Length: 350
Length: 80
Image (cartoon, rainbow over all chains, first blue to last red; front, top):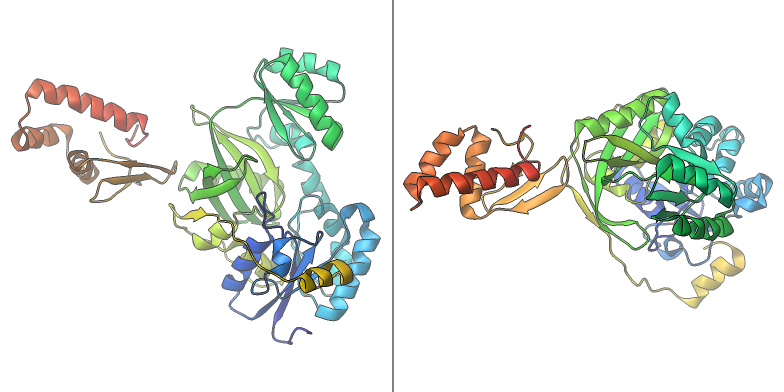
């Protein structure tokens, strides 16, 4: 089905609404509610069992796209095919790993009439785990000290610098709190085997973990910031329930980040509030978090605002939101048919 | 001594601190004390009310009051 002329056609990735969910379904829910116009959602999937593919009341049509490892040309070819069919007006990518390619392709997509609203390659790199400490130093933001190491022998210097416990982190994912050299070594081997080198060793900061969903317009204007504390955490450390907070100091951290980076698009700041009320930025995720629908529920619909800005429409800074708004995630056995599985796995679209 | 401005309380004794996301349950007496603190009533006046309303020795009241206030401080519910 071709998108009717007066409808918006928006492509969204991150349809993996699993136990460690991608943000796609939450983004779509917010778009459908917040744009006040008819929207056709085109899902872009990587794997055949991403639940969103089969949720037809959420995603109108899904196309598989190549993994980032296949390169930008393969992705571009696929997007061209999808664009011919769907007349896309906007793409909202939601995975860290795919963002560099979409950032690279943004000018070409724009020339095709497809909008994006993404950070620059420089912004994306600067907040990378490997560069986070320098990033904090440069912008006077409180970030835990770290060392980037390439060999197991380097752990010795981390021990001297930070003492124990310390945190051993993978370049892309995984973090282990190590209380002894043996534990740190074990974590080094395990994480480097899975995610490669370097390994980031970070000083351990204890406190209350808070996440802030932030939307910047790319000129230093912070359109929205919603802080959330996790109330229930899965064994993978993901929020299964969370509550919006009202605390000006958290909003100020988000504002300082936006001022310093001129961030364009959505992102998530992972904050640790210590007993002394210091606010450390532990990590910066360069896209919307999976709990992004909570921003809409609290009164600041960040995905809808991003879409409006991407399409060149006016988007004022949001004022006020509801503190104490809670999300409780749940699982649901969605039923589909072998024919649908066949369609997506055989033809790459459904 | 004041309850933080943004602390939400309900008649049933539910307390919510929107800055931390913490919530607590208070018994009816504690809920009434919190209500009065929120209205800006002073400690001396509240204690007077407690002495009039309940059979409690002044010394015991002082001890319980201190303990209660410490709990509120620990829960980050009082203005510092």
